[in-house]
Image 1 (cartoon, rainbow, N blue to C red):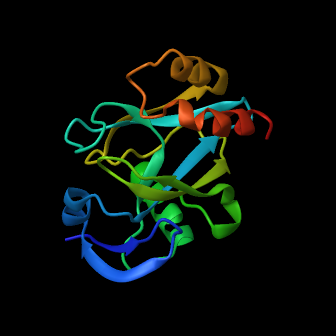
Image 2 (cartoon, rainbow, N blue to C red):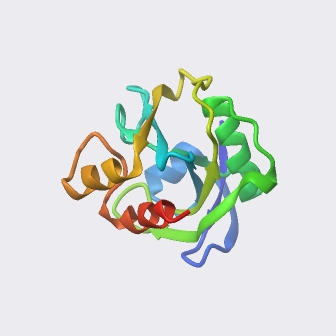
Length: 169
């Protein structure tokens, strides 16, 4: 059972703690992290979500995950990157790209802190329960795919500005 802290639209924890599935079923706000992994070639590492995932199965997305109850947001980012692709980072490797993105919608509402990490590694250890593969994409190609509503991506037009920021890093 994965327990999550419930948050309000300002990111404050309410004190309520619930099982992840119940949080999703009730569409309650909770914290998540997303990590853009970029390299010196202006590429972003995307990961293909496993076919068994509840949200966005078989789609390319970012390294991301839920903040467990009592866990810090930074620690979650470090844990998720290590679990999903085997990349061990330190807090100094994390760069905040967006402090708090609020997604309040009909389902899967959440708050996300978005990071980026610079990494020039080629081989990764993929967590097969979560992912089927990882692949480097040119940032400009991902922007093009989003603008053309490519349904193989989890990324949508509301995140284009983040990719534009990454191009200038």
